[in-house]
Length: 89
Image (tube, rainbow, N blue to C red):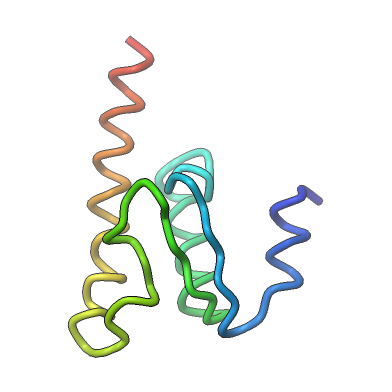
């Protein structure tokens, strides 16, 4: 079990997870998306991505905030994937 898995296992609804970058949640698009869903939706952990301020689930607990929290990670992951692909070239 990785350190991240151990940490997540101890977290509960209402806890706050700060991560420097969205890519800290996984190695690829699917893994990051799955981790985001588990943490934010299933467990109820708030997530603050330091280098992408819009990815802060504490902001906007209303309908608009929920929409942003659900949709932006997908866009951010797409951007991250493009950046990662460029870096490998």
